[in-house]
Amino acid sequence: MSTDALLSRRAFLSAAAASVAVHARGAGAPAAGAAPSVLVSGGAMMRGARFAPSVEEVMRAHFGAVRRLALVLHATHPEERDAMEARLQVACREVGGSTAESLHRRDAEGARALLREADGIFIGGGETFVLLGELQRTGQLALIRERALAGVPCGGSSAGANVSGRRIGTTNDFPVADVASREALGLLPVTINPHHPAPTNDADFRVRAGKIRGYLRFNPGERVLALGDAAVVRLHGGTARLAAGQAWLYEAGRDRELVAGEPVPELIP
Image 1: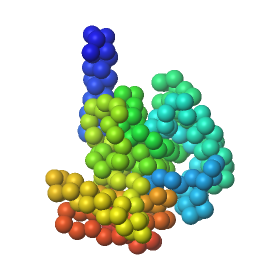
Image 2: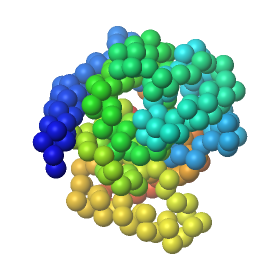
Image 3: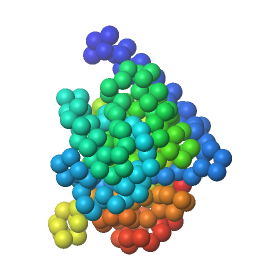
């Protein structure tokens, strides 16, 4: 590795570690009277430039009152971010009429300003480690957490759901980028596994369940929220529920499928 590359990598890790340290100290204590409003999806929630019919209702409930939505598309390859932004702009207008803008349109200070000014935040899918590394490097991890804990509606799909949990542990993605820590936003007190196969796909279901159970043998103090494609879990008003699709909660030595509409107390921060 060249000296310039080594220094660049050290600078990234130093800046990212500082962001993680702010998060660990409890950055963004909840505003008085505010409660987090958090939505996570297992991915595959769009059909072209619209949200899938099965998730439209919950997306409208979560983001319908939002007038300015900040899109965090770091997980998408840079060449594809314009197209993803355009698709989400159309989809968001369908469920509430909000104006949606991606952070990649702004410089560093402009991106922070958008996160501070927006009344809703949505974190898209793609490469989880690229997403987490960029959130750490820019300090946006702590800022998004602060906004979420102040009651700003936040949502994440696939990789965006991964970073909404405590840490990155059961992602399906390769570590294609450096991160200073696996610690994430911590908006839900679980590790998240998106794109969990349905039981009707018996072989894939058994493999995924076995991998998650194996993870918990080494990390018995964690819980894993596994979300199927187009599944949505929403935390709102102090209660968390499965709002669409299929999802499972894994703990060391036991697991269960969630029932739509029933409260899930284990997901309360």
